Length: 64
Image (tube, rainbow, N blue to C red):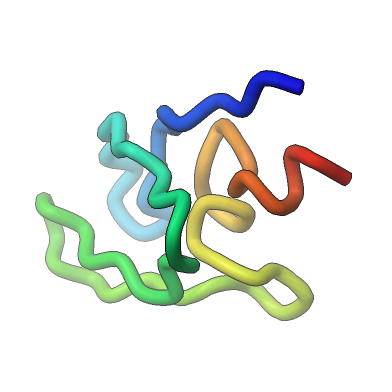
């Protein structure tokens, strides 16, 4: 199975969107919006910010 390693993260506070590379060797728990500065963390039940705010889930969720 091919994993997608690019995801667009959308800040729920200001709506800013940016494409980011999903790390394959770690889980990204925090992410700071480059527009408004809000520090995002995963929603309850999600493992990382990509699963909560990204267009593509993290590699471990893509495999499930």
